Length: 107
Image 1 (cartoon, rainbow, N blue to C red):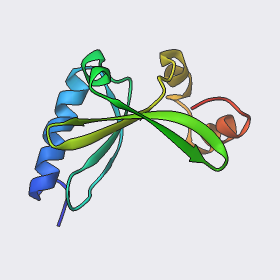
Image 2: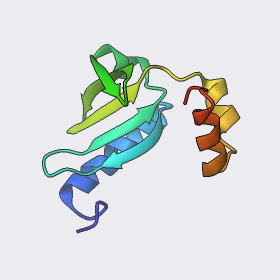
Image 3: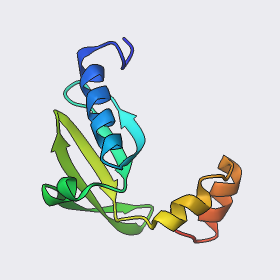
Image 4: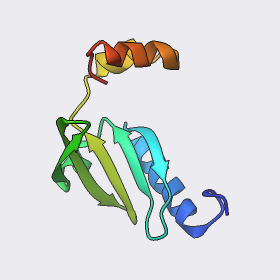
């Protein structure tokens, strides 16, 4: 089944459209059997209000993440990235971006 044709996928597509209209950048969508998980950048103020704070540790590095429910989906994001950072990396190829991150610049 395709994520765009099953009922969970339809719900995810509606939430993605809502997020984009409010200025969020959708980074990834993971379909699960219960509810989709959508990773974003630049959450709206309304989304931030209802969010819970999570503390993650990945490869020994700690970071803060946030999660909120919206329209039957879980919306997940990391600490606010700086918009200039996004504009700087938006035109990079995958290999350039990996080298940029490996040099210690945030992503």
